[in-house]
Image (cartoon, rainbow, N blue to C red; front, side):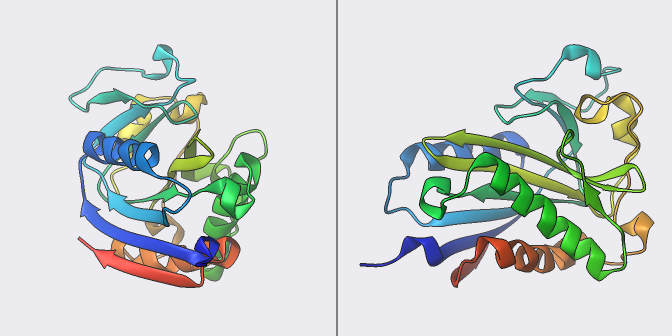
Length: 215
């Protein structure tokens, strides 16, 4: 019998609308069963604010032309836009013997390991999930668990317009500053960083059979 704990389908989706991608993740999770191979989706989104299940309206400081979508992931409000690396993890966490906390730690540590490779001192905060550099947030996390399976994932700021973050309290924190890989000295774009981040994540996720699909 095939051991599905070792198998992964890795999809590079390019630029995709947030709502359509979210619906596809939800549909995939609803339809999957114990014989479904785990997937990781790599994507960039057009400008959008997403409000998590714990989101409060007051954390959107001003209305703009950027749409606001109420999402079913955990957490508060954040911004997605071009130049940000999004990685969605559609994982059967029961099969991998993870819980939510261990998956969050794996994601955070993968990002930290990637940044450390470029001599950037990054760290996580137990009280505020994500990854930080000198007090500024460089990566955000938000997960949803349904039927023992995860979806949603991480957003790493790479080379983007950070100004929309000034229109919100990022992740619900007043005055939280954001940074990005470019500002910290990494001269790679999101597409170039994507496989490097996947490699770091997989050092903890430990998939040995990976099929990569480019859309």
